[in-house]
Amino acid sequence: MDKPKISVAIIAQDEADRIGNLLKSLSFADEIVVVDSGSTDGTQDICQKAGARVISNAWPGYVAQKQFALEAASHEWILCLDADEEIPAELATEMCQAVSDAGTDICGFSMPRLSRYLGCWIRHGGWYPDRKVRLVRRGRGKWQGVNPHDKLAVMGGVKHLTNPILHYVYRGISDQVVTMNSFSEIYAGQGQPRGGWFVAAGLVHAFGKFLECYFWKLGFLDGVPGLVIAVNSAEYVFLKHAKRWEKSLPRK
Image (cartoon, rainbow, N blue to C red):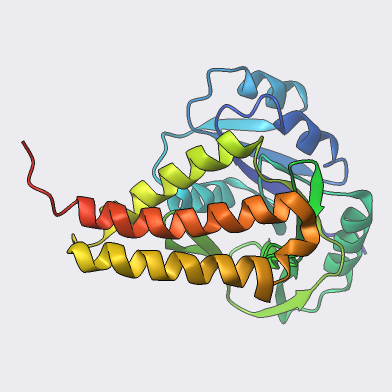
């Protein structure tokens, strides 16, 4: 019996400094599809030289772009990845064996995701195991969610793999702050403007998020990076509330 073929579907924009490492980790793949939303840093050239099929598609949002990439892949199984991730050899072997053994009732596989930030692998603070469904049988998965947060829903059974995706989550603190600002803008634009009470509620929620990340979920065990994560997580919660209130202010 022939080994089931695996496509890899990736979304990218200006990821020249990271996507090469991801592509090198995909030697097990039978097809690599990269959906690029307007890179100007050579990302497309890197992907094409690595043998990937590159498709240009203007950015429609996280959920829609990931669905576009999923539908562009052609093989029986599709692995959905971001450009800042890598597949270690142990996970590649586990996935190939899993799809070979999968019965017709199994349509997806989840796996943990281990993130590296500020020189450390982060194992606490709510960042691990961060289990994600990423490997899905063709035609049995659909990306859902509200931007910027997405989830791959599976129509059928899902099994759990043990080896993690490696996630090089932010290039540094500044990159995290830029992401927080972008995501909080998306959040603020999706709901109704709120009054000043919403900012006060945001302060309470932010304090709760810090306690959750740093103490309850043991972020302090990750040292200084764990503290940075907890503080920035709290700031992100506050920004979402404050920007929703800001939408209520009269325009000049």
